Image (cartoon, rainbow, N blue to C red; front, side, top):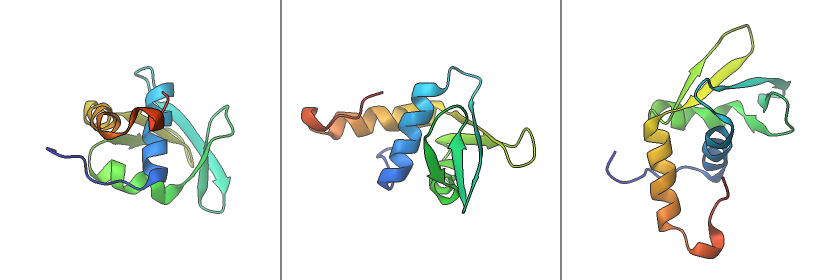
Length: 97
């Protein structure tokens, strides 16, 4: 991936959140109803569709360790995407990680 594909803001927020929480083992998302999942132990929720494009582009890996649960890990490509994304943003609008 030479230039970052434009992702929707929700997908970028998802990458930022997973990158901040993932220590190598992934993070667990649980069903929250109405097509949404929540990051286990937090109030962060995302639409299931938000995961599709980052997953298709190899930015995250999604596994299903149990029925309804999603274990999500950010890949090296995902971290590189965030680095390139941040490098293009003005300093006052940087995403905190």
